[in-house]
Image (cartoon, rainbow, N blue to C red; front, side):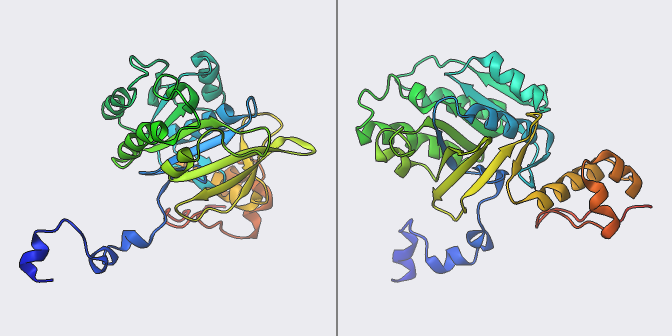
Length: 294
């Protein structure tokens, strides 16, 4: 193709795309293993199985820039579009998980459910969130989607949400699963429209554990999480070491003059880790933990 003709085209050469090193990287996590910058996630689970509790814990971690499932969340605003569960119940959960109330914005109704996306887009522009959570897809599509098995209405509803995500925030949409097989409910067009599908299910013999199966446009392995006995923190099952390192990192980040003794005293479980040498940063891309005084 001649240069003159190529200038008339909006298409981009693959060679030009590959010059951008960002093209090789997985999307940046806003909430590790759940929400990713400029991407949409469908989080589907049975009713009353802990979806809202999980996203409340995630939202709290984002408002504080804390560790979540063994990695650090970037700190920023969170927009909760809460159409199903009562707002006060969610607020209690976010506070319990230590969220910063000044960085959480609630929208518990939409003016026009026949065309809800423009209002969501406006709220994103005004509140500048890095994380948006919508509860739930069924409520969001209550007026816009008359037949839940029809694909086109879901595509029309969700495609603009993808466009909204491409402006920066991670968007998580809560949905329900079928009782028959644990897969997300309604039309397959829903899964086709989002970037990542997470299907959460209970674990036999452990009422606090949840198995999460992932399928998306980028690689994410299946994993299992567990809510601690006190109900105040989620842990990645099998990731106890990385969880501890993440909490040490956060403590030292917030207390730059901390000694090894203070870390052992203030960070639960650190006494078994600190004596063996200087802890390393829990995740690639974050600053290393400064050397600690004795």
